[in-house]
Length: 474
View: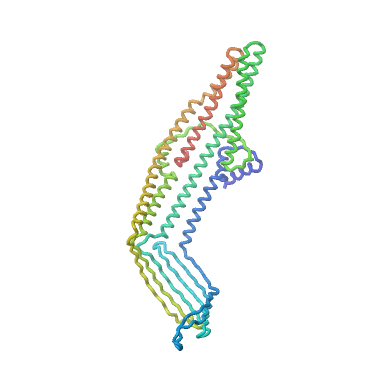
């Protein structure tokens, strides 16, 4: 409940006021509710649930009621006239009012069906011989249709729907993981762009100070004009770099809004905690977790099972089949309506139909071979994906170690570069170094800041990538 309130508050702050402070946690909360990706995955999951529910409901009793109101027929009928000894045509007219009730219950365990069929009608017959005649008829029968030695389609369809729901549920979970990683990656990329813009702005200020100093020294005749012109060129380059950085930031910001489901008119400021907190990772556990939990791998395992099921179904199409049909009913025909509900006659029948495939030009065998090939292909995909996942996770672990090493190496470089720049600026003011030397030191300071920022972001993204690929929480 608290999480829902937080999400609602964050969304309200953006939609109502149009501006706020956005952290990675806030962005993930919004994306997991409002993004296209999560909504699309949610609808797919809902569709699979409804399909399974539909199949389960289809295995319950169905009741159907039909009425003929009326069933009218008028025609000429040829009949033999014993008086004249010839065939003659007579006009006949039938008017039938009938109701029919059918109750069917599928038998999942046997692939059969039990039915209760009832009907009741009134018939008015008019012809040139007997005149008008009215009668009534009632019928109630109990029927069993039971296929024998055949593939159980009812149970197979239920299993397919259950497996598909499991696959869709896993896909939803994987979509969440992918979305979390994509939002995390885009958030840090946007933060990186913002910091690059800030570093560019700081560089412009530093270059303006250096240019102002050089201009004053040139006017005093302390340096050559070429040094002042060099810093003027550097200032123009720094301003151009800042303009490009602002443009990239705005473009990335709009793309990020689309990703997490925010309105393009919403505005926000990014905050991020980039403190380095090393995480101990058990490589063996991470690899084993990926093999056991990865949804795409588990889904292909289900695909293998479904392919085996399809192979069994195809193989059964041309096998020896039998169908048992049994019927028992009670009925009555009478000229008075009340008489059709007593002193019933009964009907009964049993039919066992045996079907033997004889010759089909090898079609059945070819279909089976095609299904076997599809099964082997699915198994091949399973083995290949298992190896690919293991390789992906190992690569991600290597990336994490490399990023951690970079962070440790670059940890102190920004402070050293800043101190070096401050000293160099004073030396330039004192005339001990040239403007070119100062520009090179300033460039090293900018590179140090960007490299340090990139290293910590690469480390955080490597952690997020491992969580996504191994289905673990570090």
